[in-house]
Image: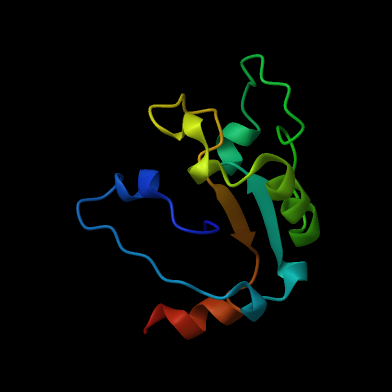
Length: 105
């Protein structure tokens, strides 16, 4: 899942769509976050030594990173950026409980 909308992700499909689930719906002990896609976050850094590389965050921790760096999809580097630069904040949801409620709506 991704925190907020991301125009870049809309380019992946012919007819993109999304659902919005309020963050308050989730038990935060079942969610982790990466500043950028989780795969490139743990890939070679290509010299990027930013503190958000190689890290997984709790909700409170990712809020601090957002306060410090902003949301990646709103940053100037977002256009035509290399794959390893953060393009959005990924949320890894480790429980289907709340997602099931929205799946068929």
